[in-house]
Length: 238
Image (cartoon, rainbow, N blue to C red; front, side, top):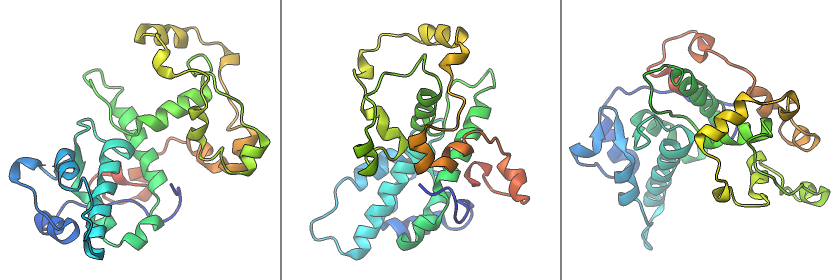
């Protein structure tokens, strides 16, 4: 996902039901809408399979629906992990324009915000892209990361080492075989040694491919202040 481009930001005003009709071609029942968010279960059931006789308009509706599912379930989920905000939908109006937005930066902003909220003692859940956080932790802390097969030069040339997270598909054993409990992981982190932490931004392999992406992991920006104007939902500023 790009980390430069147009900012991912939006509001939640206007006729939201009409917006659903225009961009998804369907309006859910009232119990499928909570405030300015829509249930992912409705999107999943309504747009599960593209009809064989679908025209271009229908294909566009299904494409928007699947992108919303991706945003609400993996890239920028909230603590409910079952709802996605309406404000993403206008950004998907022009499918040819979607790649111009800074989605990678927005995912980072959302994750930073979620991590900040999770420091509150009353918070019992967390939002944000946990897959991104997990890959970052595996890259940085060898005491908790699984063993992986080394990447060869031929694989680098063939592009099989990009993106970064692909490397963790090369594990010597499945992570599902790991019997370490939460208490065990906490103990490992409590007793972490300097040699078990990778301080460098990235390896030689990754430095060639995506140096700036890893650089961004080390920057903690207040995105609302950075843009200097009011945003309906600061979670979406990128």
